[in-house]
Length: 126
Image 1 (cartoon, rainbow, N blue to C red):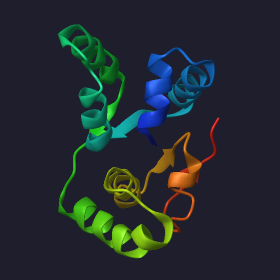
Image 2 (image 1 turned 45 degrees about the vertical axis):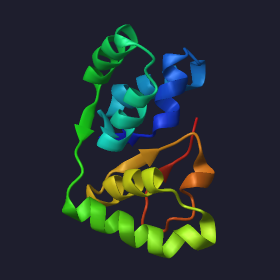
Image 3 (image 1 turned 30 degrees about the vertical axis):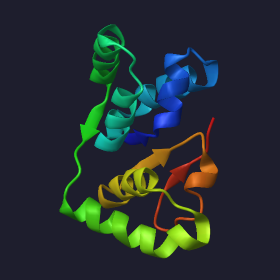
């Protein structure tokens, strides 16, 4: 299982080849997962019920990992460590914490958002 960051899913929805190919390559070797935070970010991006229905269909490909106390605590620790020094944001902290707690690799287009987190197994993109 590999956790996919929101940015790649947005690009895949826009039919950007790197993102579409990335998801296909992951599916060929493993399974796709996202944080519940990513699910929420994508829902916020929907402009109408048709887009929301399309998103729900698209997300059936993914295991959605819910937030729990351990993920929340880990995200808070990450923010204490990296917010002031690296500008870590809440959503990114929660997504990274999801990967750390589940001992799962994370792939993101925005490597700069995560590369400084030592505990995180961040995959290269594309």
